[in-house]
Amino acid sequence: MIGCTCPVCRSLDYRDQRLRVSVHLAVEGRSIVIDTGPDFRQQMLRAHIAHLDAILFTHEHKDHTAGLDDVRAFNFRQQQEMPVYAELRVLEQLQREFAYIFAEHKYPGVPQVRLHQVEDDQQPFDVLGLAVQPLRALHHRLPVLGYRLADFAYLTDANMLPDSTMMQLRGADTIVLNALRHEPHLSHFSLSQAVEILEELRPRRAYLTHISHQLGRHREVEATLPPWIRLAYDGLSIEV
Ligand SMILES: [Zn+2]
Ligand SMILES: [Zn+2]
Ligand SMILES: [Zn+2]
Image 1: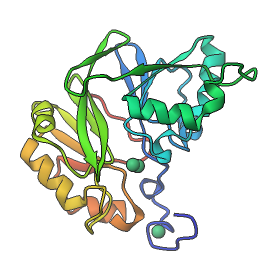
Image 2: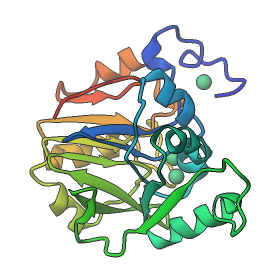
Image 3: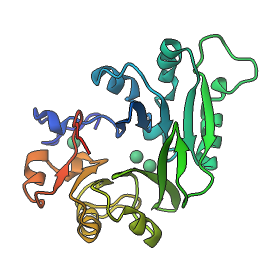
Image 4: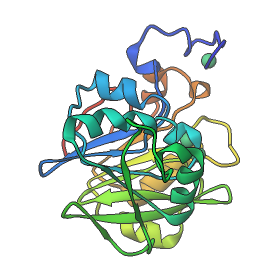
């Protein structure tokens, strides 16, 4: 946090030094990112991602969308538009907030984006030949989407999962779920709420994300969790 001097913000442990949440998926030769937050460019540079095929958005909050402008680097390298997938409300918000990208007469060099609407939140949709199952969740009153690809599921900014989503998560090998802090929060799961849901679903392993500095130091918090639930950290790479 800007200006904070708490033990997490002053920690020298790289696992306590977090950029905004995102995940990059390498699936059957496709390169996909979920959300492009304000740190998108830095994350692409740090992870040496030189090619990107598509972007999925969970919801329209700025910590998940603000980096979209930097897709221009991929447009330039790949000489093609970037396919973007989200539900209608999120696509409309992107069109408002990045009006110059969607202008009729575009300034040369602006990002090139092709919008694809996720129309049905219960049915899998196709992303470059991959079946993606949307996972409905509530973020206080805002409906948001997580996504499941094969045995990997990613859900962030949720504080309620409907039964249908719990069903769609069954059998997933690896689940990523948000856990903000210990104290309850209006629009995010707390640590104990996230752990309770994961214990009900009992995947082989789970990772917690969208962690606030209020959760405490990585090493100390992780030591309190069952071995199959870990705290995600920047740069973490897993194979499913
Ligand atoms: Zn802090
Ligand atoms: Zn949010
Ligand atoms: Zn967020």
